[in-house]
Image 1 (tube, one colour):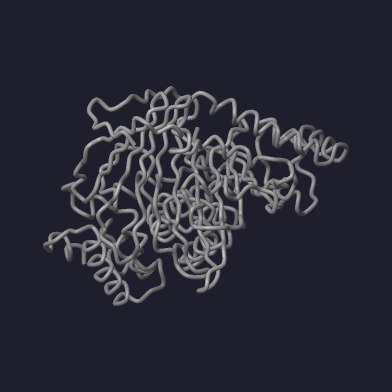
Image 2: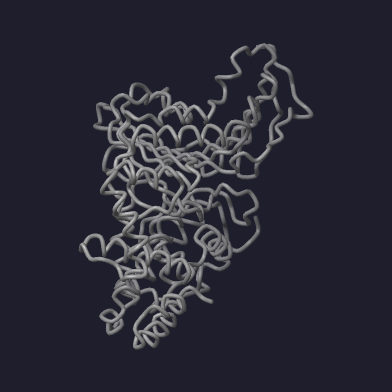
Amino acid sequence: MDALDVEAAAEPPAAGSAAAAFEAFFRDTEPKLRRALAALYGPEQGRDAAAEAFTYAWQHWDRLSQMANLPGYLFRVGQTLGIRRKRQPVLHEAPAWKDYEFEPALPKALSALSRQQRLAVVLVHGYGYTLREVAEITGLRRTSVQNHAERGLARLRAALGITGSSGAQRDL
Amino acid sequence: MRKEISDQIRDYVETAAPAISLAELAKRRTAARRSDRRALGRRPPLPRRIIFGAVTGAMVAGGAVAAGLALAGGGQVRPADVGIRLSAAMVHQVTTASNEALASAGHVFVTFSAPELAGSAPHVSGTIDITFSGHDFNAVSMLPQGPTGSTSPRRLIIRVVNGQVYTLGIVGASGRRQQWHHFSNYTESGRVVPDPRRLLRVLRPDAGFEFVGPQFIGGVQTKHLRATQLTDLPASLMSSLTFVSVMGPQRLTGLDVWVDSHDVVRQMSMTFSSRSPQGRLVWHQTVRFLDIGKPEAITAPAHYVTTHG
């Protein structure tokens, strides 16, 4: 039995549909919110902030489910949590495990970008989210997202010593 | 590495920040509910009251000691325990469990930042990956570089096997290897690679550790502890792991420790500061303990050049 079902079983009858609605929202939004906060605060703290933001949403689902842009709201909740936890200066670091398939310098190069550049590069170039999607969740203007994505990618490529234009504009 | 940069970004994020499950949310939600109930002074529903009441009663009777049994005894952590100060026995339990777990072998991954002016964004960092087995060590250092320096990684490997010291430098993005060197007359091999287990010496009752809250570290549920009395802790010992100590006198301004359900240290995070003509310098160091107790085979390199120095 899924954990959500366990919780739902303990809720009043009316909560069953609410649990299903939350589950649908969670499945749809979790990847984007986790990735956005991981980009901002590093994978560990960002993931933790995203999990807490979703926990908050679940606890207050009756009220929050009525919001027009709940993903954007939870992104700000996650930002608040991420800022509170930002005690460690190294946001992105080479992982301890040895069999990863990315450039070892990538985490450090991401850290060197500005917060908004990092966010835009990861979501737009890494995952192919549209400028509109990123603008909705972050509250930035589309043109700003585009500028941050372009400049951030250029800096990232330079930091990693990548030449040529392959993939630079593909996702925009 | 020939993958597209977008593929690499996805690989990195998805492996370092894996998907959150509903089961994890359920655990967090349950913990938050308990915290809310305690904060509001409500009694939980009847089926849980018996168990919960017994725990609560024990806490009232025993105060922090009873809470300490739950914390130091490997029980589930509770957000309502936040702020509880660990007793000397509890700290001793963590020290003993950690020393025993790391006695034979282990692996630590250290990240550190070079000094930065207080309040400015960090810009330089490095890592040291240390594997140890008994008195043998293998340390892979990724040396820090400034923002204007080359982006090519500079790595140094130091290996200590049976008291003999071997080094290998790797320079450049291509990972071009140099020759292993063996220092045949080096008599202080124990000081070449600082033993990460020495850090456990700071787990002392006089550090005034308090329970901060539960937290997942590397997928493991841990208890987050924070030292509140830092003045008597050996800052130089703690900074020796990343050679920060050579930068002059420093003061320890923060120490956080994460221990698992067996009271074994999983991670330590330290902050140091010192004065300079430009202002207050701050640097950080995080030590993550991995592969605890897992046997490690550290052997001398097959080919090397002997240096009689």
